[in-house]
Image (tube, rainbow, N blue to C red; front, side, top):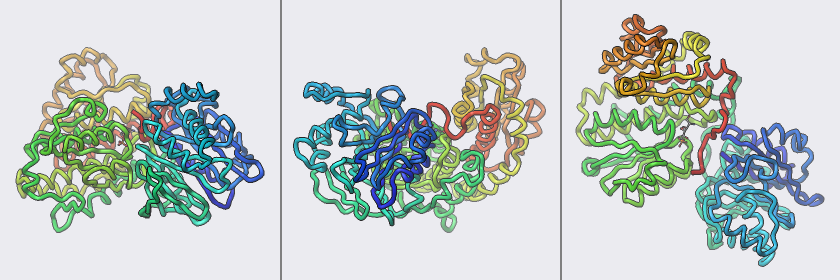
Length: 612
Ligand code: AGP
């Protein structure tokens, strides 16, 4: 979604802003702009619809804008179509304030009408311009930028991260946040603000996370932070534990491909610090057996792929924990008057830690006195900071919009939490606990084995990429895994695809199967393999072309019926999705490649969805 960068330093700001915006391109955007201030030329603003290259060309790589202070933005349209005028930064009517904004101002219409009555003229359709104009209105009254920002924040409702520069303030930019992430970066030749640490990681790993209601004044030498009452606040610094190379393609054609290959190592990093002397140790989420016993119900809340992780965990946890587990789409949960109480354990899963629906659902769960545990990848993100407990997936920065390594690390972390709770509850016997744990530790090697043999998947992608509708079928964990395989395929290749629980086919969907329909049949879940096979026979009988994913144990049987078969190594049944999903990710990747799609930045999608 939208991205913000700001710089106050001693060198030219424009090239730094453009580079920072380029590093946030993966988030998805439809227009971009920068504003820079210099002593001689005052405020200069350039913005345009389209790719960053257009802004780069428009500004000759930033050379057309002069000055060491500036803000930049990539926009993902919410209010008003993507065009040059609606792009950020927005300028106040007198032209002395430039502002960039992530989030949504809910009461912007009412404020706009008020300002129009005061004689203010608007040029764009955005909620953001209203804030720029309101700020100028208050600045004209009080002649202090900090005070004017404070007044504006008291007036507006909604979510925001702001970066602001004013022609009367040659050295400082102002930042503010509520419900939208903003990071302060402490650099050597200047200081930064950014909505995403990747934008500034080349310059500094020394950061602080702004909290809701805070306002920061950023100059080349200092960052001063204030609370909503303008009282100074001491910020705790954090050191980002990855460097710029982790967020670069490193010679690969796409981030998605690189991230698929990084999965074994990411999974290892997520698991290994949490297994000590044959036990799962979750320092950040420890519970007594009594506390565990008091949990009557478990909710897992997430969106998209993170929700699919929840689907896998529901099957596994209900079997291992003998507790009801409800998996909820965050966007539904938040308005469903959920039955959460103090005996509920509420797990929220989010790669970005900024997904607005997930955040709102978590707040609702907290309001209802549920105990919240966040499974998050981005350190210091809003969900991570607001949850009662947080466990990080150590996947490193994930840049491709289609998640792969974050999904895989979420899966194994949920397996660890399941084992931990099962042990406390006494519902997992020692032999099974040991078997799952030892197979978890073997997963990185087995994933490497899958990744070492991708030629058949490349071949199947070239054989099937022309289909315009693809069904994924499977039972139990294979069904949950199919949901993810189907989402991967549709989001990056734009092929219509659906995932069905195989047993449901005969209740309607089988009417869509006709000669030549491609069905990806998932048969990795051993306990239900025979049932899965009968469904494969069922669709074959109606003329479907079947691409099957199974395990080495079942390869021979599957090959007798399916048209094409990929087999992954065997592991403990509860962990099989961690291996089975890899060929599905690769299949989606190669199909999208064949179709010439923009794999890392699929149309209409954003990496982190910070609006409702
Ligand atoms: C997955 O490939 C998607 N990009 C999307 O479904 C994603 O998983 C979803 O938006 C949730 O994001 P989060 O994990 O950052 O909360």
